[in-house]
Length: 362
Image (spheres, rainbow, N blue to C red):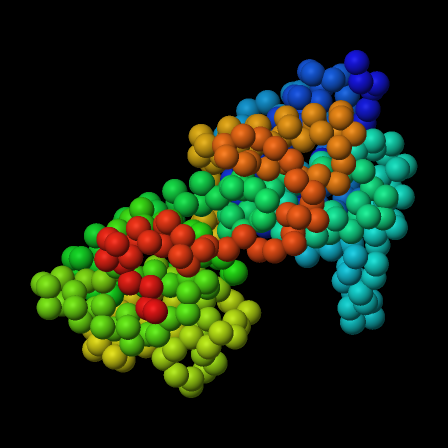
């Protein structure tokens, strides 16, 4: 029997569907299985930097949140305690609050901290672990780009959302005989673009992992016209390589910091010029982060949350729960952030997409 412990939990980085399901699983597993206390840390690591930003979570606090989007604890992707920006006298000072985070965690009596987040949050967690904070990571990111796990919480729901949106755009494009360029999230990894494009019958998919030539997408449009197709669906990941303003029609290998719509608008303008066809842009943006989690994400989040508590009970800190060959496992957080989990340009999904006529512009 494990001695009574006090466990903290926080959600960091961008929100995504399934965060509340993790919180629920952590609270229920900690209380019902081990008899532990759970402290909810508000707004990511901010709750361990500033006073009175935490609260004890009871079973009633997590009742009814399994299917709810967002996070009851709040989150931020700007609260890095290792380089925290503090406004002072009209300027911003960058401060290292990591020692304060660890001190406050100890003052709260935390025996372990469950950190739910993506690559940025896990990098912070790794540094705090190295400084002496006992913690366990839970992977969540709609980009699905965390190493050491086959899938992260939020990706499946985002994929469903993107696929449904592309389906709706598809019928509009066909009715108006347009080229439609749909931008989805994915700064360094094109998983949403690839899988949503494949699921929705896209004609072309542009992802960060494959260097493209816009003229080849234009050729795809012309070939479709010759075959009697009067519309084209192009799915674009926000992080594709695009030239600087006034550049050529080929990707450069130098990735600009993506802003919403930048990639899609550049592609659409180029396609309109080279084909003379009416072209429209749809930027899905933060709709991909919202809404109720899919059944898969609810189950995955529940599995991850319960497994994270088990790791704390076993004294396995500095680890991240993961999914490997369909089974729950664990990996060092250092391995999870060692590289970005990107699409394999020669992998099965890309091969299938090519075999079914999807153009990648290469």
